[in-house]
Picture 1 (cartoon, one colour):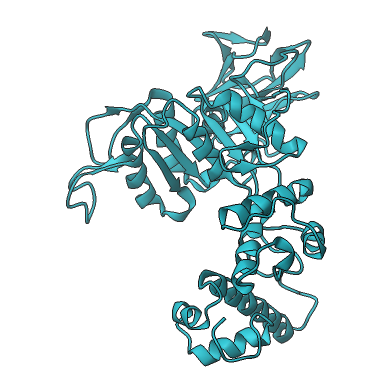
Picture 2: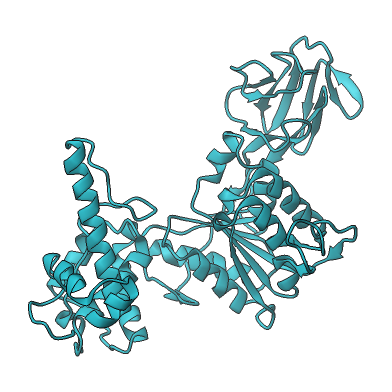
Length: 442
C-alpha cells in the first residue's frame, strides 16, 4: 500500500523523472543509485523521440537527497527556470526543459506504515489475516475523505467490493455509485460513456447523453480495468481529474463535477508506464492512495471465515467449517481468488440440496491452475490433437458445472440456459461426475 495523502514517516523518498510536456508526455523513469541519462539514444535511461533532443542530452543523479543535473554537451541545451545550465543541483519538483520536452522530478508514492485494524471486515470484505487487516486499516482511514484511491490486485480479489465499501462508509453514501468496466468498451464508446455526448456528435447520436461522470454527481465513480484505457481517453481522463470539469463529445461547454474517483487495475501499472502504454502523470494523479489486495493463496487462514460468510449469505449457518472438504480447499491454489471460492460454494450448495452444514456439502475444486481469464492451460508438451481435446474437456466440465450451479442443480432449467437437449446435457454432466445416475431432476 502506498500513499501521498496520509500521514506517515517521511525520511528520504524515491523520485522519478516524468515527461509532463512534449511528444513523449506520460513517459517516466525511476531515479535510483545510478545516474539516469535522458536522450534519444536507445540505451538512454529515459528515451525521448523529440528531434530537438540530443542522443545523450543530459543526466540526473541522486546526491544526498537532492538531484544533480548535468548537460552532456547537447545541441539545444538543458534549461531550468529560464536559464541554460551546464551543472546544477535541484530539489524534487524541479522541471527541466530539453528541446520541446519538459521533464519533472516527482516523488514516487511511499509505503504507508499503519497499525493493522482490529476489525475482521470492511463492508463486504472479510478477513482476519494480517494482510487483510492492514488493508482494512488503510480503508478505514481514507473512507471519510474524498481522496482518490487506486485498488490493485489479481482478478477475483474483490476490487469492486473495496470501491462499494468506501462509498458506503463515506459522506457521499447518499449519492450514486457508478461502476464502469473500462476494458469491456471500445475506445469510441468508452469516451462517450465516460464524458457524454451532444446530439449529432457522431453517427447514431440522435439525442444528447450525460456521461458517467455527470451521472455520478455528488457520489462515487468506480473505474475498473484502468490499465485497458486507450491513450486518447487517458489524456481526457487526466484533465477531468486535474480540473474537475467534463466536456461531452461534440460539445463546446464544460461542466464542473463533484465526484470521488476510485480506480482499479489488475495490470502492473508501473510496468505499463515503463513500457509507454500508460501515462505516468495519470497514474500519479490516480494513485494518491494505492491499495493492493492480497491473493487468496497468500491468506489461506482466511478460508474458514470466508466460507462461513458465504454460507451465511446463502442461508446456511455454519460458523466453523471443518473436515476433509476444508482441507481440500486449503490445499487448492485459488487462481481465481475469492470469486472462484464463491463459485465453488455455490456449486456445492446446488449439487447438495438439503445440506445443513459445510461438512455435508459435495465440494469440488478445479484441479491445476488457471489463467486470469479462466481458460484452461494449454499443454504444449502433448500432440496437437491431444492438447486440443484436453482443453475442450476442461471447458466442457467447467461450463456444465457453472450452468448447473446457476440452475440450482435442476437439469431441465440448466438445459434451458445452455440451449441443449435435456438428455444430452444429463449425459455430458454424468460423464464429468456432476450429477447422479438416475433420470430424475436434481
